[in-house]
Image (cartoon, rainbow, N blue to C red; front, side):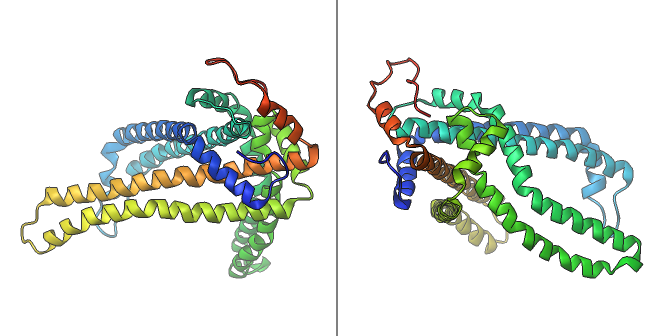
Length: 343
Protein backbone atom coordinates (compact mmCIF):
# COMPACT_ATOMS: atom_id res chain seq x y z
CA UNK A 1 0.00 0.00 0.00
CA UNK A 2 2.99 2.27 0.67
CA UNK A 3 6.73 1.84 0.11
CA UNK A 4 8.25 0.73 3.42
CA UNK A 5 10.70 3.61 3.66
CA UNK A 6 10.47 7.31 4.57
CA UNK A 7 7.52 8.72 2.67
CA UNK A 8 7.19 11.81 0.53
CA UNK A 9 4.12 14.04 0.52
CA UNK A 10 2.72 12.39 -2.59
CA UNK A 11 3.21 8.93 -1.11
CA UNK A 12 1.41 9.91 2.10
CA UNK A 13 -1.56 11.32 0.18
CA UNK A 14 -1.53 8.47 -2.33
CA UNK A 15 -1.42 5.91 0.47
CA UNK A 16 -4.45 7.52 2.10
CA UNK A 17 -6.42 7.38 -1.15
CA UNK A 18 -5.34 3.78 -1.74
CA UNK A 19 -6.33 2.72 1.77
CA UNK A 20 -9.71 4.37 1.46
CA UNK A 21 -10.25 2.68 -1.90
CA UNK A 22 -9.22 -0.82 -0.77
CA UNK A 23 -10.84 -0.79 2.66
CA UNK A 24 -13.85 1.43 2.01
CA UNK A 25 -16.29 -1.30 3.03
CA UNK A 26 -14.81 -1.58 6.51
CA UNK A 27 -14.35 2.19 6.92
CA UNK A 28 -17.74 3.20 5.59
CA UNK A 29 -19.51 0.30 7.29
CA UNK A 30 -18.29 1.13 10.78
CA UNK A 31 -18.73 4.88 10.31
CA UNK A 32 -22.30 4.43 9.07
CA UNK A 33 -23.04 2.17 12.03
CA UNK A 34 -21.71 4.78 14.45
CA UNK A 35 -23.66 7.58 12.76
CA UNK A 36 -26.84 5.52 12.56
CA UNK A 37 -26.77 4.57 16.23
CA UNK A 38 -26.02 8.16 17.23
CA UNK A 39 -28.87 9.57 15.13
CA UNK A 40 -31.27 6.96 16.54
CA UNK A 41 -30.33 7.74 20.16
CA UNK A 42 -30.61 11.52 19.70
CA UNK A 43 -33.90 11.19 17.79
CA UNK A 44 -35.41 9.08 20.57
CA UNK A 45 -34.21 11.56 23.19
CA UNK A 46 -35.66 14.51 21.28
CA UNK A 47 -38.93 12.67 20.77
CA UNK A 48 -39.21 11.86 24.47
CA UNK A 49 -38.37 15.43 25.41
CA UNK A 50 -40.95 16.88 23.02
CA UNK A 51 -43.60 14.47 24.31
CA UNK A 52 -42.91 15.46 27.92
CA UNK A 53 -43.07 19.23 27.36
CA UNK A 54 -45.64 19.20 24.55
CA UNK A 55 -48.34 21.05 26.60
CA UNK A 56 -45.88 23.91 27.19
CA UNK A 57 -44.68 24.35 23.59
CA UNK A 58 -47.55 26.63 22.40
CA UNK A 59 -46.85 28.95 25.34
CA UNK A 60 -43.23 29.33 24.17
CA UNK A 61 -43.28 29.18 20.37
CA UNK A 62 -46.85 30.20 19.47
CA UNK A 63 -47.23 33.62 21.07
CA UNK A 64 -48.51 36.90 19.68
CA UNK A 65 -45.89 39.44 18.64
CA UNK A 66 -44.41 41.32 21.58
CA UNK A 67 -45.35 38.79 24.25
CA UNK A 68 -42.82 36.84 26.29
CA UNK A 69 -43.31 33.23 27.37
CA UNK A 70 -44.44 32.70 30.94
CA UNK A 71 -41.95 31.04 33.34
CA UNK A 72 -44.29 28.08 33.89
CA UNK A 73 -44.02 27.33 30.15
CA UNK A 74 -40.42 28.39 29.50
CA UNK A 75 -38.75 26.58 32.41
CA UNK A 76 -39.90 23.03 31.51
CA UNK A 77 -38.81 23.54 27.88
CA UNK A 78 -35.37 24.75 28.94
CA UNK A 79 -34.97 21.91 31.43
CA UNK A 80 -35.86 19.44 28.66
CA UNK A 81 -33.32 20.98 26.26
CA UNK A 82 -30.40 20.69 28.69
CA UNK A 83 -30.29 16.85 28.93
CA UNK A 84 -30.86 16.58 25.17
CA UNK A 85 -27.90 18.91 24.57
CA UNK A 86 -25.71 16.94 26.97
CA UNK A 87 -26.72 13.68 25.29
CA UNK A 88 -25.97 15.13 21.85
CA UNK A 89 -22.49 16.18 22.99
CA UNK A 90 -21.86 12.74 24.51
CA UNK A 91 -23.02 10.94 21.35
CA UNK A 92 -20.81 13.13 19.16
CA UNK A 93 -17.81 12.55 21.40
CA UNK A 94 -18.30 8.79 21.56
CA UNK A 95 -18.80 8.60 17.80
CA UNK A 96 -15.66 10.63 17.17
CA UNK A 97 -13.70 8.38 19.54
CA UNK A 98 -14.91 5.28 17.70
CA UNK A 99 -13.98 6.66 14.28
CA UNK A 100 -10.62 7.92 15.58
CA UNK A 101 -9.85 4.37 16.73
CA UNK A 102 -11.08 2.85 13.46
CA UNK A 103 -8.70 4.53 11.00
CA UNK A 104 -5.42 3.48 12.70
CA UNK A 105 -6.79 -0.05 13.06
CA UNK A 106 -7.47 -0.17 9.31
CA UNK A 107 -4.02 1.29 8.57
CA UNK A 108 -2.37 -1.48 10.59
CA UNK A 109 -3.83 -4.00 8.17
CA UNK A 110 -3.38 -1.87 5.05
CA UNK A 111 0.33 -1.19 5.56
CA UNK A 112 1.00 -4.92 5.84
CA UNK A 113 -1.33 -5.84 2.99
CA UNK A 114 -3.65 -7.90 5.17
CA UNK A 115 -7.32 -8.48 4.48
CA UNK A 116 -9.78 -7.69 7.20
CA UNK A 117 -13.50 -7.57 7.85
CA UNK A 118 -16.09 -5.15 9.16
CA UNK A 119 -16.52 -7.20 12.33
CA UNK A 120 -12.79 -7.32 13.07
CA UNK A 121 -12.40 -3.57 12.60
CA UNK A 122 -15.46 -2.79 14.70
CA UNK A 123 -14.20 -4.98 17.55
CA UNK A 124 -10.70 -3.50 17.46
CA UNK A 125 -11.99 0.08 17.38
CA UNK A 126 -14.47 -0.68 20.18
CA UNK A 127 -11.75 -2.22 22.37
CA UNK A 128 -9.66 0.96 22.18
CA UNK A 129 -12.54 3.41 22.53
CA UNK A 130 -12.18 4.08 26.31
CA UNK A 131 -8.51 5.05 25.90
CA UNK A 132 -9.36 6.99 22.76
CA UNK A 133 -12.10 8.87 24.57
CA UNK A 134 -9.69 9.93 27.30
CA UNK A 135 -7.11 10.90 24.69
CA UNK A 136 -9.53 13.12 22.79
CA UNK A 137 -10.70 14.82 25.99
CA UNK A 138 -7.13 15.47 27.14
CA UNK A 139 -6.12 16.69 23.69
CA UNK A 140 -9.06 19.07 23.60
CA UNK A 141 -8.24 20.43 27.04
CA UNK A 142 -4.54 20.87 26.31
CA UNK A 143 -4.82 22.21 22.76
CA UNK A 144 -7.91 24.28 23.49
CA UNK A 145 -6.59 25.53 26.82
CA UNK A 146 -5.04 28.77 25.51
CA UNK A 147 -8.23 29.78 23.69
CA UNK A 148 -10.42 28.91 26.69
CA UNK A 149 -8.08 30.84 28.98
CA UNK A 150 -8.18 33.90 26.71
CA UNK A 151 -11.98 33.76 26.56
CA UNK A 152 -12.26 33.29 30.32
CA UNK A 153 -10.00 36.24 31.11
CA UNK A 154 -11.77 38.45 28.58
CA UNK A 155 -15.23 37.61 29.91
CA UNK A 156 -14.08 38.13 33.50
CA UNK A 157 -12.67 41.55 32.61
CA UNK A 158 -15.87 42.57 30.83
CA UNK A 159 -18.01 41.50 33.80
CA UNK A 160 -15.73 43.32 36.24
CA UNK A 161 -15.72 46.49 34.15
CA UNK A 162 -19.49 46.39 33.77
CA UNK A 163 -19.97 45.95 37.50
CA UNK A 164 -17.62 48.79 38.36
CA UNK A 165 -17.26 51.35 35.60
CA UNK A 166 -14.34 53.02 37.36
CA UNK A 167 -12.09 50.08 36.42
CA UNK A 168 -12.47 50.54 32.69
CA UNK A 169 -14.78 50.79 29.74
CA UNK A 170 -16.54 47.47 28.92
CA UNK A 171 -16.64 48.42 25.26
CA UNK A 172 -12.88 48.90 25.12
CA UNK A 173 -12.30 45.59 26.88
CA UNK A 174 -14.60 43.80 24.44
CA UNK A 175 -12.37 45.04 21.63
CA UNK A 176 -9.44 43.30 23.34
CA UNK A 177 -11.14 39.88 23.04
CA UNK A 178 -10.26 39.37 19.34
CA UNK A 179 -6.66 40.33 20.13
CA UNK A 180 -6.51 37.80 22.97
CA UNK A 181 -7.92 35.08 20.70
CA UNK A 182 -5.49 36.06 17.95
CA UNK A 183 -2.61 35.53 20.36
CA UNK A 184 -4.00 32.27 21.73
CA UNK A 185 -4.89 30.59 18.43
CA UNK A 186 -1.29 29.97 17.23
CA UNK A 187 -0.48 28.32 20.57
CA UNK A 188 -3.54 26.07 20.26
CA UNK A 189 -2.63 25.15 16.67
CA UNK A 190 0.95 24.34 17.72
CA UNK A 191 -0.29 22.13 20.55
CA UNK A 192 -2.91 20.46 18.33
CA UNK A 193 -0.31 19.47 15.73
CA UNK A 194 2.11 18.34 18.43
CA UNK A 195 -0.55 15.99 19.83
CA UNK A 196 -2.04 14.89 16.49
CA UNK A 197 -0.41 11.42 16.55
CA UNK A 198 -1.98 10.46 19.87
CA UNK A 199 -4.97 8.57 18.36
CA UNK A 200 -2.64 6.41 16.24
CA UNK A 201 -0.44 5.72 19.27
CA UNK A 202 -3.49 4.65 21.30
CA UNK A 203 -4.44 2.00 18.74
CA UNK A 204 -1.10 0.92 17.28
CA UNK A 205 0.89 0.83 20.54
CA UNK A 206 -1.98 0.20 22.98
CA UNK A 207 -1.07 3.25 25.06
CA UNK A 208 -3.19 5.09 27.58
CA UNK A 209 -4.23 8.74 27.12
CA UNK A 210 -1.30 10.41 28.90
CA UNK A 211 1.31 8.08 27.38
CA UNK A 212 -0.20 8.59 23.91
CA UNK A 213 0.04 12.37 24.20
CA UNK A 214 3.68 12.10 25.29
CA UNK A 215 4.41 9.68 22.46
CA UNK A 216 2.86 12.02 19.90
CA UNK A 217 4.86 14.96 21.21
CA UNK A 218 8.08 12.95 20.88
CA UNK A 219 7.36 11.87 17.30
CA UNK A 220 6.31 15.31 16.07
CA UNK A 221 9.27 17.07 17.70
CA UNK A 222 11.57 18.39 14.98
CA UNK A 223 8.99 17.75 12.23
CA UNK A 224 6.24 20.16 13.28
CA UNK A 225 6.19 22.19 10.07
CA UNK A 226 6.11 19.09 7.88
CA UNK A 227 3.24 17.57 9.85
CA UNK A 228 1.38 20.88 9.90
CA UNK A 229 1.82 21.46 6.16
CA UNK A 230 0.68 18.00 5.12
CA UNK A 231 -2.25 18.13 7.56
CA UNK A 232 -3.36 21.49 6.18
CA UNK A 233 -3.02 20.25 2.60
CA UNK A 234 -5.04 17.15 3.49
CA UNK A 235 -7.82 19.27 5.01
CA UNK A 236 -8.02 21.38 1.84
CA UNK A 237 -8.13 18.28 -0.39
CA UNK A 238 -10.82 16.66 1.78
CA UNK A 239 -12.91 19.85 1.69
CA UNK A 240 -12.71 20.18 -2.09
CA UNK A 241 -13.45 16.50 -2.77
CA UNK A 242 -16.24 16.53 -0.19
CA UNK A 243 -17.83 19.48 -1.97
CA UNK A 244 -17.50 17.70 -5.31
CA UNK A 245 -19.16 14.59 -3.84
CA UNK A 246 -22.07 16.59 -2.47
CA UNK A 247 -22.61 18.68 -5.62
CA UNK A 248 -24.36 15.97 -7.72
CA UNK A 249 -26.77 15.22 -4.88
CA UNK A 250 -27.60 18.93 -4.64
CA UNK A 251 -28.27 19.16 -8.38
CA UNK A 252 -30.53 16.10 -8.31
CA UNK A 253 -32.50 17.57 -5.43
CA UNK A 254 -32.84 20.93 -7.20
CA UNK A 255 -34.04 19.30 -10.42
CA UNK A 256 -36.67 17.40 -8.43
CA UNK A 257 -37.80 20.46 -6.45
CA UNK A 258 -37.78 23.42 -8.84
CA UNK A 259 -40.25 22.11 -11.47
CA UNK A 260 -42.79 21.46 -8.73
CA UNK A 261 -42.35 24.98 -7.36
CA UNK A 262 -42.63 26.60 -10.80
CA UNK A 263 -45.84 24.74 -11.58
CA UNK A 264 -47.23 25.57 -8.16
CA UNK A 265 -46.40 29.27 -8.56
CA UNK A 266 -48.50 29.58 -11.72
CA UNK A 267 -51.42 27.49 -10.45
CA UNK A 268 -54.10 29.22 -8.35
CA UNK A 269 -54.76 25.85 -6.69
CA UNK A 270 -51.32 24.21 -6.44
CA UNK A 271 -50.90 20.54 -5.71
CA UNK A 272 -49.72 20.68 -2.12
CA UNK A 273 -48.84 16.98 -2.06
CA UNK A 274 -46.57 17.36 -5.10
CA UNK A 275 -44.87 20.40 -3.57
CA UNK A 276 -44.28 18.58 -0.30
CA UNK A 277 -42.98 15.55 -2.19
CA UNK A 278 -40.53 17.70 -4.15
CA UNK A 279 -39.32 19.31 -0.96
CA UNK A 280 -38.85 15.91 0.69
CA UNK A 281 -36.81 14.68 -2.28
CA UNK A 282 -34.69 17.84 -2.18
CA UNK A 283 -33.87 17.57 1.52
CA UNK A 284 -33.31 13.81 1.24
CA UNK A 285 -30.75 14.39 -1.53
CA UNK A 286 -29.03 17.11 0.50
CA UNK A 287 -28.85 14.87 3.58
CA UNK A 288 -27.63 11.86 1.60
CA UNK A 289 -24.96 13.94 -0.11
CA UNK A 290 -23.92 15.37 3.23
CA UNK A 291 -23.55 11.91 4.77
CA UNK A 292 -21.50 10.56 1.83
CA UNK A 293 -19.34 13.69 1.78
CA UNK A 294 -18.82 13.58 5.54
CA UNK A 295 -17.61 9.98 5.40
CA UNK A 296 -14.72 11.04 3.17
CA UNK A 297 -14.04 14.34 4.93
CA UNK A 298 -13.72 12.54 8.27
CA UNK A 299 -11.91 9.39 7.15
CA UNK A 300 -9.34 10.76 4.70
CA UNK A 301 -7.60 13.27 7.04
CA UNK A 302 -7.37 10.66 9.79
CA UNK A 303 -5.82 8.15 7.40
CA UNK A 304 -3.24 10.76 6.41
CA UNK A 305 -2.46 11.50 10.06
CA UNK A 306 -1.99 7.78 10.70
CA UNK A 307 0.38 7.47 7.75
CA UNK A 308 2.37 10.45 9.00
CA UNK A 309 2.66 8.66 12.35
CA UNK A 310 3.99 5.53 10.60
CA UNK A 311 6.34 7.67 8.49
CA UNK A 312 7.82 9.32 11.58
CA UNK A 313 8.39 5.93 13.18
CA UNK A 314 10.11 4.72 10.00
CA UNK A 315 12.35 7.79 10.00
CA UNK A 316 13.22 7.75 13.70
CA UNK A 317 12.93 4.15 14.82
CA UNK A 318 13.85 2.23 11.65
CA UNK A 319 10.43 0.57 11.59
CA UNK A 320 10.71 -0.40 7.90
CA UNK A 321 12.60 -3.73 8.36
CA UNK A 322 10.04 -4.90 10.93
CA UNK A 323 7.21 -3.91 8.60
CA UNK A 324 8.84 -5.75 5.69
CA UNK A 325 9.24 -8.91 7.77
CA UNK A 326 5.64 -8.73 8.95
CA UNK A 327 4.36 -8.11 5.42
CA UNK A 328 6.24 -11.19 4.17
CA UNK A 329 4.85 -13.43 6.94
CA UNK A 330 2.25 -16.05 5.89
CA UNK A 331 -1.37 -14.88 6.22
CA UNK A 332 -3.53 -15.98 9.11
CA UNK A 333 -5.84 -18.96 8.55
CA UNK A 334 -9.41 -18.11 7.54
CA UNK A 335 -11.42 -17.08 10.57
CA UNK A 336 -8.36 -16.89 12.79
CA UNK A 337 -6.86 -13.82 14.39
CA UNK A 338 -4.51 -11.62 12.41
CA UNK A 339 -0.84 -12.29 13.08
CA UNK A 340 0.84 -9.97 15.52
CA UNK A 341 2.40 -6.93 13.85
CA UNK A 342 5.40 -4.78 14.68
CA UNK A 343 3.24 -1.86 15.78
